[in-house]
Length: 361
Image (tube, rainbow, N blue to C red):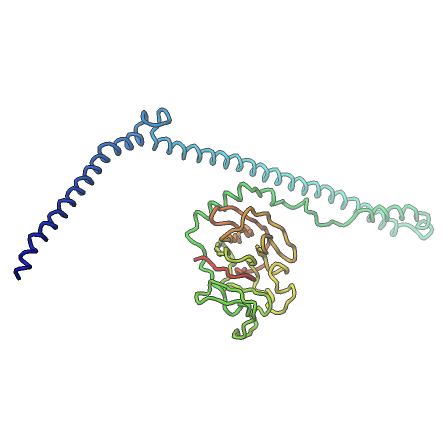
């Protein structure tokens, strides 16, 4: 007990020294904050709101930033207005051309009908009023009339009579439209794989959003009419018939994949082109093989020149405009756009032959 009483003064002294040190530190910290509030913040506030303190004469930093936003949006607005005017003029010109072509055809076929009626009337008149001898004497004239009639060909379908919708296509409009759509969409579709379609060379995650390639065919998958039995494909469990739809796929871990859309009639069995994505009339896909990228449909493969390998691949399907667009979500860059008359409901479709791909949600 006596020893404890001896230690108390020493312990108290140590604690007092700690308190003194802490108070000094707090005082220094307070002085630093006071100096910052008094010296630094007024200067920053002055540069932010005072035009005389900014590097740009007559403008504060906030005003300069505001002016930059207005200037850039003004340029974009001006560019949009110019492109709108150009495209509308093209539409008007195409409309006039198609209309004029149809009018020309009407005049041409009206004249042809009149000529045919005249020839037919002349031949009928000969047949009705001439005797056998007179008919023989008119043989040359009959031959000439018949030859003249045969020279009038039957009408044939011509693209010149159709309005060419390609006149509205514009790389600038496509880029702006895609950026606007991607920025305005509240979210992407909740796309998941239909486990009944997943190839036995693929492993499906529990949430049905990730496909992992396995070179060894799984024996655990029960075969069925919906399942792909050779190519490493899978269909989504949802189809789209109308409207605008978007979904994103994480592809950064794979060097061999296909992403796109397919009709429900896509064959599932065998190693032929019928069930291979992009090699038949039932599928439209963006694919990667190593460092090569391409768009494929019905056996036609279009190489795509990409500056870098996208970590994610976005798919935008506009069924009203009949457009399928692939883009890089990180930059909003349009990688490829395809126009087609899709004959039925479309399912998101996937294939992977290296590592994994995942639907982003």
